[in-house]
Image (tube, rainbow over all chains, first blue to last red; front, side, top):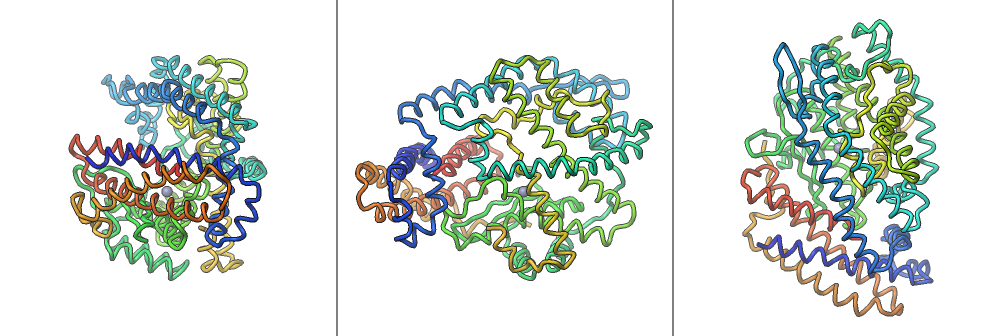
Length: 462
Length: 101
Ligand SMILES: [Zn+2]
């Protein structure tokens, strides 16, 4: 089998990859060298980034020991956590019947139209974590402890410092983002309080189990051809180039939209730089949310298209900008739908959008606070289950403020979010709010007619 | 409503697919040997960087193309156990490729 051979050989590329970076570090007149060659100048950014990362590399022997020890360290802990949560069942009693259900099924009940289902699921979920809380805490302590040890060994001032460098983000940018989030938290709280009121909570505080409760309903249905037309026409309001690009994706069969057996769920976009095209997988069922998904993925494809003239190495981009074009395109479609929707549909669409902004801004802020505090304490000691719970509650209090009902918070969010357990991706989602903010600002300015961005946006997505 | 992957490869058994696989193996061997030789000294830095960048662009683009074709094919037809096994290996392969440079 070819793949096995390739796989084995590809792992041997580490050798010359590391050798190159360490060699670059030894060149003292690198600026001069860069300026003598167009090819090198073109790759100036990644050359400099390679030099930066070489500064944090240890000796070959140390790196080998580390990667072997990680297999039995953080990787083993991650596997344990994955096993615990994927086999975890929740005992739940609905309509007089006691059932044992997988965790994702019970967590999905948060979207149920019936409050009693949402509430019952919430209590059952929390109760069920007692079975695995100690093991999860041990896993998290092990993983975060290793991250601290390694970031010190590599000469970073903190795990956050290491994360920022890997995401190509400056500390000032992060701080500005956190400031902006804090400034806007009151607006989110107003929304949550309104939602509490609509759902009949007299205290005007929303319990955690009602965060995802649906408000209003969207009945719009689309055939696949109608979806294509709707997307292309509305992309046109932004730019003809984007519209004809989307049309080409439909025309040339870049999209696999038909649900069928043996096909994976969800949606993704694969940018194919080597052939200057993209492919999109979706499972189209005619709902409005499906149309926005395809628009979202087309945004990724357009992003890829903007990078076709770059070399392969220069076409890579980090997490903070990965979602810009996609959210941008999705927002174009949501805005267009708002114009044709009836009152109830409008409320549903807007509430949906507020719901997801609350996740990407308020909740991610709470995750950031949680992770930061965990790292701070882990420097000193292994944390107990109670400490993890207390830190999580405190983070939720700081993020959601008085809009979340103190009696019904979620002290176990660190058990069910897998990203806390990835040793190589700390503070996993923190750039998302920034992207969200930048985009809304961009769209607002376009609407005000302040900017004519059609031409400039291509550069933006570079 | 289905995509076409023909612009990548026509099949796993196609000549192009096999040739690209062979190219990857050959390029990696070449680069291993070349880097052991050339990163010993700091001379001719400009030529060495240009050569290396060119080869890495070529190599990672090829690995990407192979991995993309395999992953896309399997994402719409992952029924058999054999496929699942390939999928796991691919994930690993892909991480390695993304870590290049
Ligand atoms: Zn996306």
